[in-house]
Image (tube, rainbow, N blue to C red; front, side, top):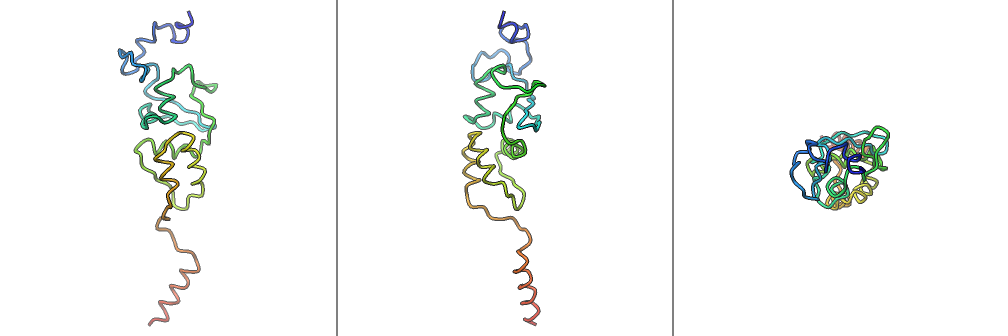
Length: 156
């Protein structure tokens, strides 16, 4: 009876349209939908399951490949719940999409994002965030801009 309740009445969770439905591999349970809704610290994200499992052995990969949906925390609307920084998660999700780190210029949350990357067990992202970063081509500090302008005028 408990199996039927947890799989919405379908024996062994079959027939749910999870993509690889006939596979009995424990590495890819067919019970997760292709589109997953995540509530991360109150921020809602909707993405594809293949995005959240794009980095093997990461926390999200283990959650969505090694566990059953009913084992994961859910919010009151049924979304998978992660008690982490919801605003910084957007950068984690962006990284998972194409494995590139793209941050805005003058990003003051770098160390906090690195801590989130450590939590989600994304070693390459942790490494990139810990590496010395070159600031983007932003405006120079006011004192050097003024000095450059004065130097240009006196050089005539």
